[in-house]
Length: 574
Image (cartoon, rainbow, N blue to C red; front, side, top):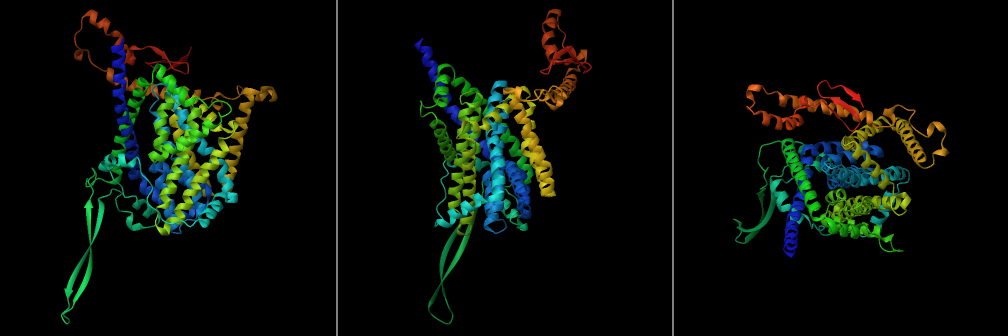
């Protein structure tokens, strides 16, 4: 018995280095994924920022911040472009604040994509998607309140101006890059980018448009050499000084491939996604094997238990500090939130605990930006510091809005609802990503370009209708007697207006038709090509063949209750 227990402990100890290696590869793949997005869409992002007249409209600035951050998968890149535009005088701080808000929303797409990797198990997917989207819900709700407030009062701009003017800020040393010291040896051996190209395009330097983002010359050394020359007319020696620049070529994989930026970006995108998915799946399996039985219960109890009364309210604020500290260590909120998403999926961290951790990660990434701003050159120092402070104040105000009072923690309830919908209809997760991060921002941007009248005329009635529906739904669940009879239920409306089942039926039929066509091609095998089997072997193999070939399956039931006949595609209701 003791021998078996010792063997079990030894195996678990051996799994820890493998766990750390998978986590390391997971973080590196996120870095490469960001580089791939920048190669594929970096110049497009620069072109978007180039038209700075658009940013006089705060809604347009918000949408540009979202789309650009989704394109380059890096809020630090979009923030650095904003800093360059502000310091060069092409953009004022008031117009930069909505872009910073948009970058805060766009950076949360990464952990939502990571949650999709746990779609194989329904309950895990439900928890992981809810834990990932709580970040999205917090950012969207904060923007809905703070963007109009900032547009009317300019509170963040005025507050940061007062801070910048009251302090004698001097250029300091670079902020610490703790995690990059470990990850950069691998990531820099794969790809290195010249991010000044994106910033240059955004600031109107057309000469950089044809320059590749892939860095070729990495290190430049300047040596000073003193020479002594003798004049012809005088015997005295004249000392001269000459500068010599020695550049070293980069050694990463794509330094001289001859491929375009888009081609390299697509190669890196596919390979990084493959590594990301593989590492995430193995991490989940490994964590499930390690966190079993009493170990899992003990860890869940430690992480999710509040302090004893009357100090229970302090637990969430401690989690905020932990999230901020961990994000400061890893230098990226996307890395931290993506790393805890699998833990939320397997149930180690509850969504109530993940919420303050996520809020803390927002604070941690802004403190990193402040340190980076303090290391800026003298001509960009004030602008960089003010933009970083705006980002910091935005997140602080968001926390004050949506965390201190338990009733105000709407992001948790919204994320739970999204998780439940995703558990019922797994395609809902993809629809959510497309709708919230691409389609909806694009529509709002088009309306904002048409003018304030068009934007307010369409968005205000839509938002008012949405709020009314939410209020009626809450009353239907809790106090239906307060509503008139025709509002106590939505059953009198067409089914597609209050349920996703009709859409699910359509998607299911399309999926089944595609699967039927693919499997029919696989089953078209002539009798001459089949091996000759005995009667016993034929009966034995009949069931597996029926599972693999739809022509041998007569009907089966989908989640929506529709029974489909595999031969003619018709459906019947049981």
